[in-house]
Amino acid sequence: MVKERSVPGEGFEHPSGEYLEIKEIGVKIPIFDLRNLDDHEAIASSIAIGARVAFFGGVWGVFKGVEHTKKEELFFHIIKTGRPKEAKIAMLTQPKVAVDMIDWSKVHPQFRNLQDPQEFDRLWSSHGSFLHIIGPVSPELYDLPGVFITTPEDFKARYPNLEPIKHSTACFVWHDDPYLENVVKRTEELSPKKIHIGVSTLNTHGQEPPYAYEELIGYLSDGRIDPRAIDLVVRDKIYEDYEAFGSHTQIRVPLDSEEPVLKVVRIGSLSPDGFRNSTGYDLEVIPDAKDVRRFPGEDIDNVLFSMHNKIKQSWLQVKKDEV
Image 1 (cartoon, one colour):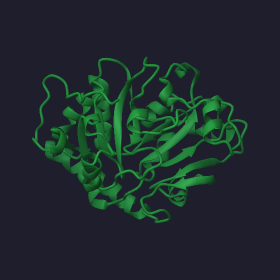
Image 2 (cartoon, one colour; image 1 turned 90 degrees about the vertical axis):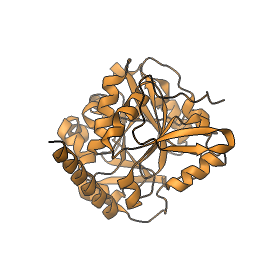
Image 3 (cartoon, one colour; image 1 turned 60 degrees about the vertical axis):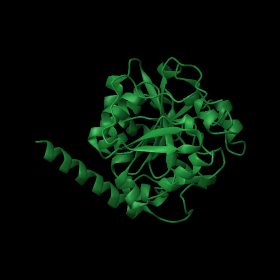
């Protein structure tokens, strides 16, 4: 059962006054735009208090802040009906933070150079696409909420045909995007407690998620997504205009007992060749890695690169106009 919708905290303002209304059940969901700096305070304050945010990043997903001390977070498994308990959630984490959450002593020696913050950041900044990096969790973070930690037992249950792993891992997702960085930074400042932002696509487990905004409206209207489970919608007018549709690529760093090569766990919007050419790191695609681009096999790397440049130019113009 999904809890009733919460609204952004006291003092909440909706600059544009735009809402997505589901008349059948009397629900109005405020709509914001990541590319509008005037919306950032409301977005950040909402995430900081645990609001459930529909967010576009090539695919419609949901962001939710999870308190660091919270052992169980059932929301992601409730909204994604049928999601197995061993399928854990990615954390939206800036590379400069994520690099210190990985236990580099458990990473293959040939890849420990990635513990250099600048080199680790290049895994994202060199191409500008959303990307998930999976690595072993630092012992200091074993108290992370369980929804973020994949134990060796979880891995075996989820991937019974793959070689088992020896260490617990977590998945860190990021997009080299100054607008997103601004929202995350402000969220951290506003949050009354330490939180981690959980990320997942908005769909029943195993089913296609919504990609276009019109599809999101359809999912909310016909009940495939319970509209009472969403507190606000964050659009991205630049990303949506480029129509670079797809879930995100997932790459796991090799553990100390494995072959020294990055492993593609899931093929998403950024192709393996796009990652290889951008970063200089070779990789291998694991057997049965699913292609989660909207149109599997379609190369949209150049669209992503062009979009990344557009986002950077837009940010520079916004900051110039502020002067």
